[in-house]
Image (cartoon, rainbow, N blue to C red; front, top):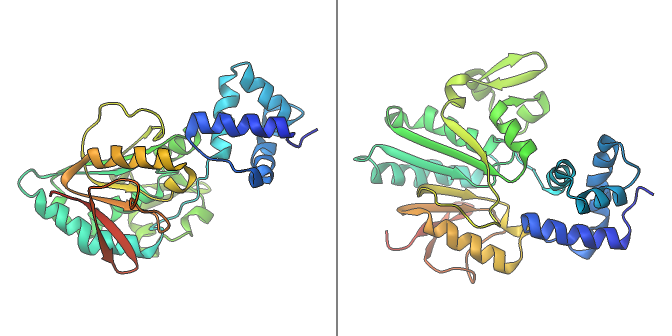
Length: 274
């Protein structure tokens, strides 16, 4: 039987909650089957139930494959026009001005998926803010999925992925065509770094950032996890720092200490006390 039994589904609900803080509601039974059947095929087992039994045995490879499959990794270049316009016109000019003496800039894409968001930010800095060319830049991307972090590090994208929001001028300037893929230019790729990081687990000691992009990930968490992640994000923002969330996300009612600022078709959040 390839379909998930009720017992299998409830086990996976708890497994995903424990590992990634993803809340899998009862009506998402279909999603388990859609996402995990390819894992069943790749693993050479007969059913989702066998995947569950492998997880119960502590099979690390199966655990990673299931988390990767169940994690939403929807992304594109310059995803959603309004936040990137806010970056160009408000956020980056302000944090650059605040750091002109330090000559350092740190930006974290905290749910980076396959890297398009962070690479998009790197392109904006390179093309539109030449004053930071000689600065120390720390452009950091993290995700809990091994598969997407590996892809982000590789900088290899298909034609279909390239066509999702990348301007033609940027394709010419920042990519080379290699076989059936487009590859990020080494000069741009050298400016970014990608690592595994689970936002829902205890955060290790880490640096503070000028900008944290935490977009379209809080919607998958329960209220307590949302509040914890937002508190940590606030704690790791510099005094003049900005937090960018997804359109359906807000710190309101979850954490204090952010000043909300309308910016075109979006809202950006500045750490209070700056």
